[in-house]
Image (cartoon, helix red, strand yellow):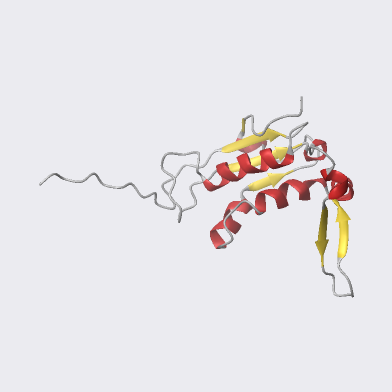
Length: 150
């Protein structure tokens, strides 16, 4: 009888988590969000395990300079209910002007698992509107993600 190879299952604290930094200047929102979601889930690693958080930290800077293709900034809207009659609506352009970090955070949130593990993954995403961030001590690795509009 031939011995079967053992399947590797990552343990929660056995995975070393790195910090990555991404400059979102002139990057397409959806393509950037999908790449960030893959890193947060840990699917870029060979030891990916679905029920263990094997992802890494991602710092996004210059979120105010993100772009969308076509007319999506003016056509698409965020809608939410605030307790009064009717829903409150705001276009992506208005949200980009008011809270530029929300566009990236909500786009990534929708691509993560809808569970407590997904919420832990989203906590590892740090988004900043400008080029300044307080994570210099973690010495984040600069990486290219997404695709720019050129």
